Length: 234
Ligand code: CA
Image (cartoon, rainbow, N blue to C red; front, side):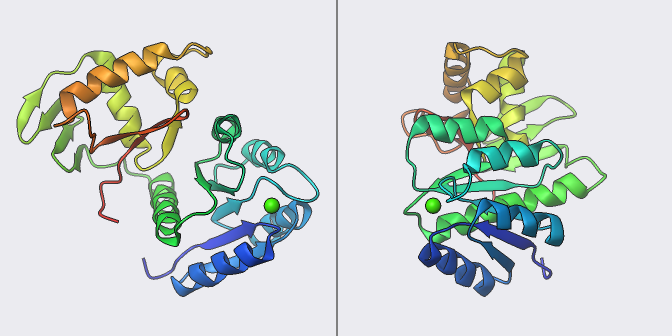
């Protein structure tokens, strides 16, 4: 992509904001920096950024409120970059509609990889054609038209639920999906009991991972959910 997108950083820690801004600019992104929720929302409405990097601990408002406010009318990728390590907050941010969550301190390489995932999702959001009916990621091939899943060119039989799970993971490749989100999307209901997700994810893994003790495709985000590994090498 020659014309890279505009990223709004909402972060009150000047050192981190500056580090992010410089690194992203070096990679060709246009960057806006806001140090309060109020100025962040002002930049959002006046500059129409493509992606938001959001700190949760802001001086004037809670970052979680910003997520739910933006999600009422906008689907732009929101990546939470926060020092707060608590799992419940991570889950709440994702459930409110954040696209991803990165805990400080982070490696810039990891952050850039997540930004690229967000950037690619922008392309698929705006393209009118459906994504390719053939999906490839490492040893895995999925032919959506024929409903065929293969590992190293060998057919693998998936149950309808396992296939839906895999389809959901592929749709959100590279993003962490919470147990509750998966439950809602695959089973169609909300519940605090997410044991179904774990059970079916385990059976899916047994079928598509070469070594389920060290999965290459479906990665567990402990206490949060699952992520399908990015198919493009990072
Ligand atoms: Ca902060």
